[in-house]
Length: 415
Ligand code: LLP
Image 1 (cartoon, rainbow, N blue to C red):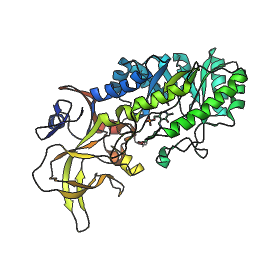
Image 2 (image 1 turned 135 degrees about the horizontal axis):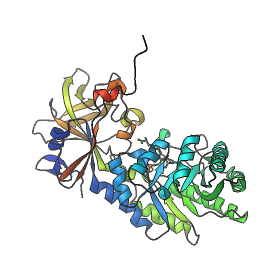
Image 3 (image 1 turned 90 degrees about the vertical axis):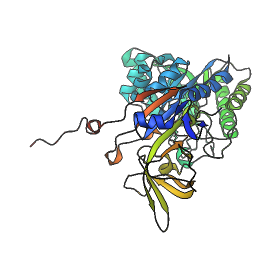
Image 4 (image 1 turned 60 degrees about the horizontal axis):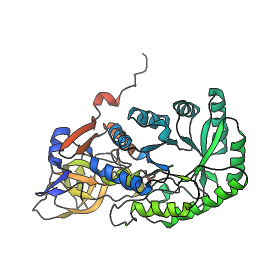
């Protein structure tokens, strides 16, 4: 089933024509399909089945309150990396006891807040963080549940910027160091050792890197249990990659079933932190063609969405499909779709064969993850609106920023 079907020549989000969304909410606008998010979440939850554990949506992929609220209603847990993400999850109705707190640079204030609300566990990424968390817990008269994020030194075979499980990456605690750090954690009065986690990278389209990392963690778990440190859960980090163009990731159920099979008789709950695979293909960025600028060397279509709205093409050379909202009978030409920002790297797509005219609407597909959340106000561009479509209804879940929003909190120097 397509969540963005073409009906009578017009691209829709579920049952809503995108032309309608553009006239109601303007452009650029992120449009998400409620059914797509729901189905993607359920693929994980159903595969986990009755095995103890949680599917904790990685909030960094899409932190809109409407999206988080929808996932909270479905029973999701959340993987957060900042006080801001904690605040969002709580506002959206997420349960603290279903939150795991990841990230290499947690502040004392974020740790305190998370402890006070009672998050499920802290995924600790360094020895210094472990000591800080213990201090914060002791001062607050509380005990923090701890999992160590272990760096298993596995090549995730993904883009170098989103590969995180190699020795040279800043993330986690080297697996060889882990037993000593666990022993330290077990001895600290403010900590309660509950689990282990890893996250080797994002946009993984094959199972072997996940399973290699898992095998290394299982060896560690056995070493620890010999020393009397018995873990209750294993967290394998982010989820599978998605199809942007011709990638062929295995079904989510294959990943989850393979992991469960490896856990076999062990009494270990399983935590997963998928982000991209829950919402990337649930979103499209709706934009209008401002001008056509054919040149001797290249044809540029200047659109009203830019790198500040979706930085993935500029940052990772990401390829995302571009669909015209209305099918055109005119012949196609090859276009670079570029934004109004003053940077050569400001492109959303290159060398696409499309029939375009000024005023046309286009949709940049597969932009529901790491799209809006990575957007900025560069060039003083207000950030886009966000809309969730549910069947034939559309809900504005984030108003487009206004010019006043752009200068909020700023002031002139006193005279
Ligand atoms: N857990 C941790 C600790 C993570 O660092 C991440 C992603 C996830 C879970 C979610 O991984 P996923 O299921 O989405 O693969 N901005 C980049 C992606 C950065 C991913 C960072 N960490 C992009 O647009 O491709």
